[in-house]
Length: 310
View 1: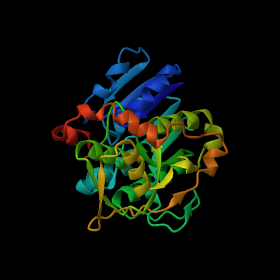
View 2: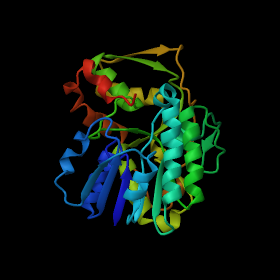
View 3: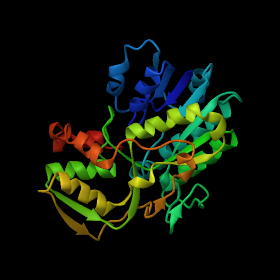
View 4: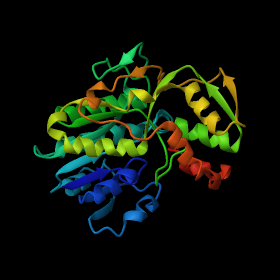
């Protein structure tokens, strides 16, 4: 297949693109390259890869790169509520207007897969299914809900991801498990707020696998939303810290009451819908922490800001 990956140099994209190339697909990456092109260096020699620097808000460019594509995997976004709140105009332009450009220009025979988020649910009691009412609290969540509606109107597939973790060529340290692991290693101390809040997690490689799964099951999944994760990784934030402490027992924890999550994520998520189609996670939180600990000793505290999405 010929596949366009917007945001292909990002956290998920730089993990996904090599997987697509390994399967023999022809891949075009459209990315602003805000964090550079290093995350794609390891696949630059593949003749099936094209890299285009540009923004999804550039409608003319989007039209050009979409010509002849069999599928569009739309990852490009301003991700997370801190990044969206710091530049709301850019967040709305990218997450909503950019998504509309792709949906408007999509032909009837092109597959469209959209990266969404559990932040769409907002504050929820009980277990979230795909039918749970979407009540986002943050600009990030609201922009993704609007993007979902745009994509589903043209038969696109929406993947609502759990909180991601793990190593990627375009590394992020502002994700919960990654952040806590870095702090446990470097500070020997974690300040934990809302430790009893329930969250659900997924390794970035499993997130990338979900896009390939959706490509291969596009006819069945078309026009629908799917929670992407695994119920085995439904955990409280405190339980995540306890896994980290099992590996780094010299790390201590202090409870903080002055901070809160703007998205108020405190719920379990049902993954029955995607599980029944055959998708399951392959990498545990403990495995993800252990892999990060092979690399984190070589990232200094001073340079960690380079790995934040703000």
